[in-house]
Amino acid sequence: MDNPPLDLRIPRNPPDDHRPTHPGPQQRRKDPLCPELDSPALVLIHAFIPLAIQQLYIHYTGRNFSPTTAFFFYNLALKAIAVRELQLLRRLGHVHGFLDGDAHARDQVPDHSVLQVLLSLTSTAAIRPLFTILLSYRSALGPSSIDWLFLPLEIGLYQIVLDFWFYWYHRLMHEVEGLWKYHRTHHLTKHPNSLLTLYADHEQEFFDIAGIPLLAYFSMRVLGLPMGFYEWWVCQQYVIYTELAGHSGLRLYSTPPSTLHWLLRMWGVDLVIEDHDLHHRRGWKKSENYGKQTRVWDKVFGTAGERIESTADKIDYGNTVTMQLW
Picture 1 (tube, rainbow, N blue to C red):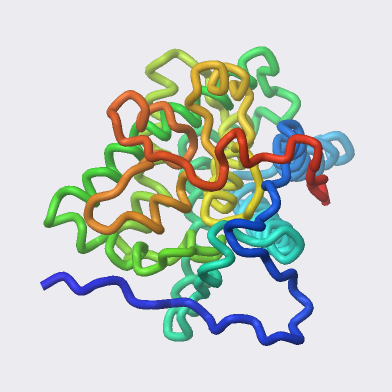
Picture 2: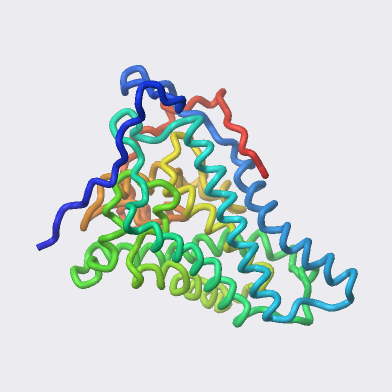
């Protein structure tokens, strides 16, 4: 028999805690707005710093990284970027609070799973650069070889294509009894924080870390897009940030960075932080909001849920949040 989810919540903060307190539902102030250009700027800075370092190395030494050197370099870069983004998201939470914060504290990583989450972070930082290098790295090409004409299109389409594969993989994990057991652990949290992005069984980890990105990569190649190593690296930074922010539960109106955000918004299929938060809060075997990069496929297949705190009338458009870029 399938047991109900465990309660992973930490105790409420004591009265003398200096973290912000949040008014009840009737008195709650409107959610602040994160400007559309802040998160793309953050992601691009993080993505291009390693590329700039590699290009400078080529300029001053006259040679490029070997595949082995590139693996260790981008492995380290991905870890540094992920840790920095986790810190930034956590800081924003301490300042602005969290969704459903008047009713529930944010869940924390269970003590018995701290090592598992740490290993998941390490695995992500190792496996994604590994298959990216094996499939697309060419020592004859440096970061200056990026196809700047195709890059904006590749970034936006990669998120949508990846989300198609993720949507169906994710939905089937919920709706097929034999697959649910591999996804159940991830849903033990109803109010996740960004670290719980990595809280899952090994089978789910494999598809999250490698399976879905590989399907997206080969799909992009079938569509005729170049998807060289450096372009793929940039695309993955957009995806990783969105995954972490989507589990942050931040009480902000913030949409994932995307070069096609203008188009997604025009069609009403842009994602906000609350969408995936509600997926955890409301969902168990049956859920909604299966997409994690956009709402395209949830809208197409009729699984988009209604928002509670991120509706247009509950956004303070005059109160903007400045994202610390570094």
